[in-house]
Amino acid sequence: MPWSDPARRFEPAEDVQLRAELRDLLGLGPVVATLRPSGPTAELTALADDLRREAQRRSRTERKRPTWGLLAAAALPLLAALAGLGTWGFQQKHRADDLAAQAQRQEQALTQLASAHASEVAKERQAKEQVQQELQLASRKGNRRAEPYLVIPVEKPLKVMGDDYQRVKQKAQ
Image 1 (cartoon, rainbow, N blue to C red):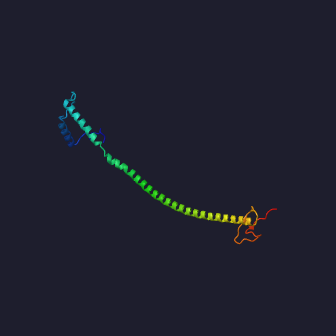
Image 2: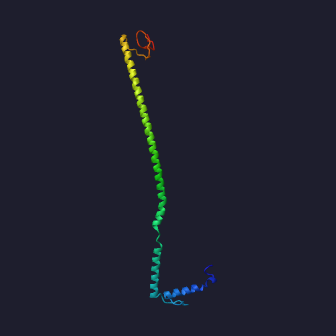
């Protein structure tokens, strides 16, 4: 219903009675059909100031909001995200530790393999030096100088001209 509707102009009796009681409490008295030409009285001004102060007090108290509750509600997703990141980081740390242990085991295996290989190479060099010494000794026995070509040592060398080695290539004359 719009405000201009004539059916709305008639208030229920309870509302009229309540309005009359409020007027009496405020000290306004009965409704006068004509407006007073005089300005507001000192009582009305004091009453208006009291009403204004009360309205301001109520407006200040109504605006209080539960800020701690709002902050806690806003912090919950942040805390959940931090907990998730902490769990993920913990899992990544364990994964990195496992990979580091595996790398260390592989490094130890490679170190052992390298030391075994180094000992084999040292044995081969020693055997090669021994063969070289034997060849030099054999060439000195035969009053011949060492030949500059490849000599392959064999287990049972052929006895050619009293030497303990086999010629691979004949000397070019």
